[in-house]
Image (cartoon, rainbow, N blue to C red; front, top):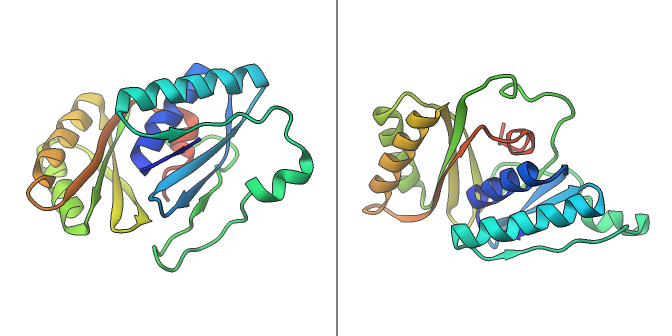
Length: 197
């Protein structure tokens, strides 16, 4: 599954994992800007996850490319299993591989993660400052995609994250381009495992 934007990608991944028994192999950033999410599971589960991805993309009004490969030939894995790397242009890895085991936040209940994605650093910095002044949220990380696209991830209870994202989103409009703003209540394991460290 490939979609423009880190935050829509995480929302779609969350929907896919909640719809079917699939596992994340890796996420690979590209400079479209966007993210390619690679998942595995039984053919039926992967097809159900693909349907959920398309439905969520329609709901978010984002373009998406989804493909299901039944019984992939092992000889093709060097093409889709990207090696870990570090991209000096965006000063971070462009391949994210979920670590096995529990994520630190997975044992907590009743929280949400929120994303504010902009084109332009000034806009996202102002948005996040406004978000944390509006509600009791914690800034978890930021993800750069290239082309000036940057996403900041926050965490807190659902109401606080919604209020913070709404306030931050409103602040962006005068300073830059808002790409996306999303809230995921009770995020899936895969979405948590791919959060930038």
